[in-house]
Length: 325
Ligand code: BTX
Image (tube, rainbow, N blue to C red; front, side, top):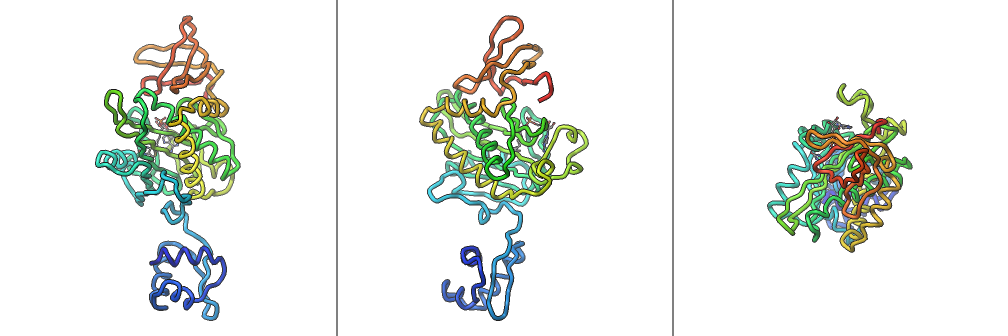
C-alpha cells in the first residue's frame, strides 16, 4: 500500500489531500497517514499541510526498485533483489541462478562486505555511495562467445554515464571503465556452462559514484576515481542504474541477433586500448606489442614484437597499457 501511495504522490507532483488518496485506494485516512510516515522513515521527504494535504518533495538516495525506472516490457530488472548489505552481489546472483531465478534478474546491494574483482582480487564497495549490482542472463550462445557480453556491458555503462551525467569515459580492455586516467568501475563476468551450452552468465558491475577521494583505501587512492570527484557534485545513482539496465537490454538483444560487429565498433570507439602499446602477461610469459582490434568473439588482437599476432581472451590474460591507462 505504501508504494501505491508513493506512486500517487510522485505522479501528482503537487499537493493532494489525504481524503483524495484514501478514496483512490479505498483505505482510511488514518491508514494513509500511517503509510506516509513509513515512507518518511524510508527516507522520502513528503511535505504536509493541514489544509492542502501531502506533497512529494524528494526521494532518498537508495537503489530500491521504487527508484529505478524499468520501462514496461523490459526483462532486465523486471525482477530485482535488493539488499542494504551483502557479501557480494555476484556470489548471491550465482546462487539464485543455480536455483533457477528468472532470466534478467538483477541483484543490487547498497554495500558489499566482500566485493570481488577478477582473479581473486578485491573490489572496495563498503559504502552506499557506489553502484554495485549483478545481472543474471541465460543467453542462447556458445560459451566461447560470451566475452562479447562483457564488452556489451561496458558500452552500456559508458553510454549511460554520458546520458545521465554528461561525462565521457573510456574503456580499457576488457572491463575497466576509465575516467581521467583513473579507474571508475569494473565488470566481473562469471559463467556457468557445459560444452556447447551456457547455463547462465552473471554480469557484475561496480561503479564509483559519490565517494570522495578520502573514502578509498590508501592502496587504490592513486588510481581510483568517482563520478562525484570528477563532476564536483553528487549524481543520481538510481537514474544511472536505470539507464544502464535499459541500455544493456538493448545491446544484449542485438548480440542474440548476431550483431556483434555493431557492439564491437561502439566498444572500439570508447576504447583507450586499441592502437596502444601493451604488455600481455600470460602465466610466466610476457609479450610486448600493439593492440590492433577486437575480433567478433570479443578477443583482443595484439601484434606482438616477436612477429606473432595473438588473439587474447580476457579470462586468461592481463593486458597493461605501457603508458598507464
Ligand atoms: P579488477 O580485477 O579489474 O579490479 C580489481 C582491482 O581494482 C583491485 O585489485 C584494486 O587495485 C582496484 N580497485 C578495488 N576497488 C576499487 C574501486 N572501488 N575503484 C577503483 N579501483 C578499485 C574489476 O576487477 C571488476 C569489479 C567488479 C565489481 C562488481 S561490484 C558488483 C559485483 N559483485 C562483486 O562481488 N563484484 C562485482
